[in-house]
Image (cartoon, rainbow, N blue to C red):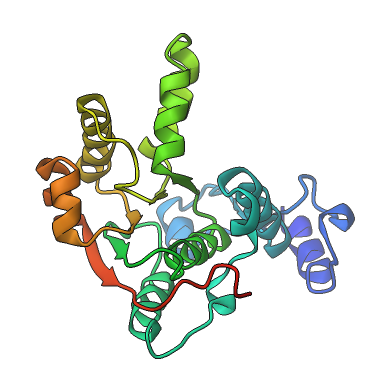
Length: 245
């Protein structure tokens, strides 16, 4: 293993991609045991660990983005967000949130404001930061998610996969909450999914065109009560940017 470590130290600094990796498993670099482990296993050979190299982390992030985001959202980042006086406060809250994303973060964001002001752009940018740190996630519009669940009702295993999108991913972006046609079934399904995130203390980002008061009127009060506890509320202002480049 020591020989592999030396080989990695020699090649990794100049490696140009996974296709040129010299490790037994591309992208995985050996990590020697800590001094604590050596002392703990005195007289024995403690196991070495493995870590992902930057090329593997980037490749996994790009693959996740292709699966987790549709179309134009794959191109949106926090650095491409056009900041102005009307949205700067919201941008700064989102930026600070993105900077502290780690595997132990539990809180989320509820981003609300008029149509076309960049709510989903900010959420997608945050999700990309999570991907770059090796964390998994998904961005999906609430109406699309509910339609997928409805359409899968003749296939229980498929429905389970769809609901898994928002249950066990590390970070979930539910886009456009409040835009769906609200029925008792919709309210109950949303409550079940959001409550699971609440109970398991997993970060959730919500975007909505509704104010918090309007959202309470449109969806089950049980949902908004949990969102208030789970999420920092972020208001974004301005005119719609759609069609303006």
